[in-house]
Amino acid sequence: QDVVNKIAAGEIIVAPVHALKELIENAVDAGSTSLEVMIKEGGLKLLQITDNGHGIDKEDLHILCERFTTSKLKAFEDLSSIGTYGFRGEALASISHIAHLSVTTRTKESSCAWRALYADGKLASPKPGQTAEPKPIAGRPGTQITVEDLFYNVPSRRRAFRSASEEYAKILDQVGRYAVHCSGVSFSCRKHGDAAGSGISVAATANTVDRIRQIHGSAVANELVKLKAENERWGFKCEGWVSNANYNAKRTTLLLFINHRSVEASAIKKALEQTYTNFLPKGGHPFLYLSLEIEPQRVDVNVHPTKREVHFLNEDEIVAIVCDEIRDTLSKVDT
Ligand code: ADP
Ligand code: MG
Image (cartoon, rainbow, N blue to C red; front, side, top):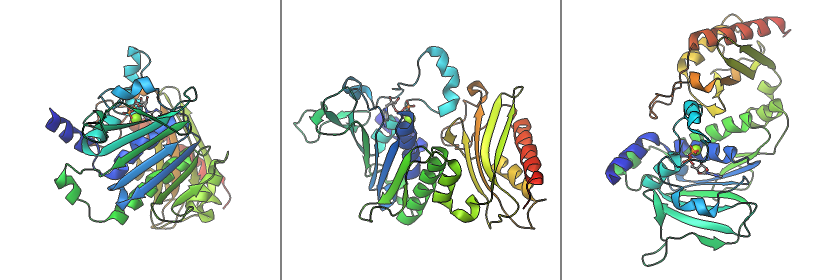
């Protein structure tokens, strides 16, 4: 059973950035307004994320890393919205099977923080002979999740990593995506030992364009136009900021969120690039930040976790509407 769990976990989490993405989403779901990430060796040695969200009740700590433990399904019907957030209650469980996981958390109501270690889905004791029960310690409200020695027990996976800096670059990219999407949250992400302020370090702002400026620079931020599209028939809304014809990059940057989850979608990316060909000189590429909200029951619930691409009903129709809107918007701006 443990081997099965380990293999399953290793499929959901293939690289440090996948674990981190889950942890960021949890922190955002907990209503955090501040999120700090610390990395060692591209996340393989250490991934640590500290938030100031609502914390976890002490009573919930013993089941925290059991599979399908989630506080996010209020009723059974909510299962239909499973697609919104992908697999439910699997992230922490998976991580506990392939890394050393510790959690320090404090709710507003609690007079102290609680620290718990996990191994293979269960509470673990720090040393043989010691209790595995959570320990009270001093700490601020919020949660700190520490993931150490990722894949320590999956040597084949561990060997697959070529360079820590490559993994770190992926981590910065993913943190940057959530930083754009959650502009009201302050974000930091840096390597252990680097000076505060290196990597990503952005204060909360009420303004998405400001946040894009913080992360991607003024050259693109100065050339953004607001995009809005919606359609009742296909059950979607789309908002975002896209570059106009003055901005022209060597590669496309697409920050795509579906129901507030950062996702990849190569078909959508292609269609969006295509839309720009009439506006940009040959070989030119745009920047797009798009937040798509789709009725949860329309998002494919059956996509295997190893497939990071998302699919939804009437994808072609929805993408066509968004592309039309981009064309419309671009043809109206004076550049
Ligand atoms: P899911 O996010 O699908 O519910 P996870 O395994 O990612 O599953 O997390 C399990 C549960 O742990 C969450 O439902 C939530 O109640 C709690 N949790 C995890 N991370 C945090 C956090 N940073 N702050 C507060 N609660 C958290
Ligand atoms: Mg989660």
